[in-house]
Image (cartoon, rainbow, N blue to C red; front, side):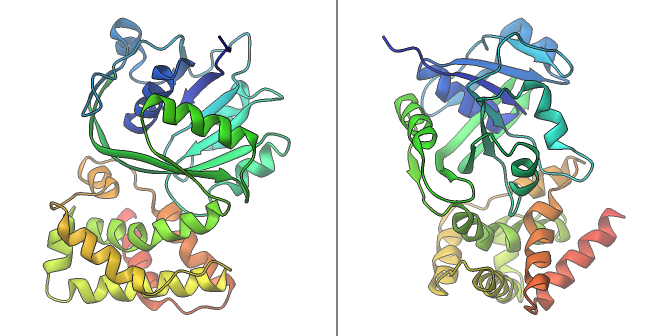
Amino acid sequence: MSIKPSVLIVGAGAIGSFYGAILKRAGCAVSVVMRSEYDAVVAKGIRIESSLGDLSYRPDNVYREGDTQDTAPDYLMLCVKVLPGIDRAALIKPWMGEHTRLVLIENGLDIERELADAFPKNPIISCLAFIAASRTGPGEVEHKAYGRLVMGRYPDGIDAHCEELSALFIEGGIKIDLTEQVVSERWRKCLWNTPFNPLSVLANGADTATILDADGGEALIRALMTEVIEAAAADGHAIPMELIDKNINATRKMPPYKNSMALDYLNGRPIELDAVLGNVVAIAHRHGVAVPHLNTVLAALRMRQA
């Protein structure tokens, strides 16, 4: 039997815990770095209710921040939220080895650059997660639906590391789409996230149906999506205009849904404003693209944060 690679998860919340479970199913040694839930995970492991079956598992090692390990992992999976004041490079530096492959499963646009600068010799695999999962208690996760990952090497291409990791995730039971252009895929995900997530906060944690059905709601979503497409095109990543209709129609077909930013806001947690919206506006400004609707939403949310 071939020896499966070792995996360390930094940010073992709902998303990190779920994908750790998938790799555990595939036979990998999976360890986690915990903060507030350390004692619960040491005592009973990670409990995951899922339509895929019981995904509960005991990590091979449970570390606190500041701990050290004898051997660096083959893959370090970073799943923390991209927030101001969190130095992700410093967070993972103690765990990175010379040959560690860094895997990002995080929201947002232009989130890889600072890590590529900090670890220029380590391959980076950037992933977009299409999943509905949430924490229900310390070390407890409910996986509601989906789980597909779109992944590629950053800044572009598909290498042997992507192929190995993809095969492991597939063996563990989820669908993987490899892409040569992962930055373009991040722009495509922004087409939905950048309008809906910030508007949900401005609308006091509103769900998707409330946003679309409000007087002028769908028109505003369409205006925001159009500006995202224009910013993406200026950055070299063309998105077909017909994807606006496709996204809106798909959203109307699913049950009313509170996105992750809405849930963070309602639970008093910081929101990923720059990763999801601020970086899109910054790139648009860099290319001289006017994005007045996105500017207005960003300014309003900065006032709310203040």
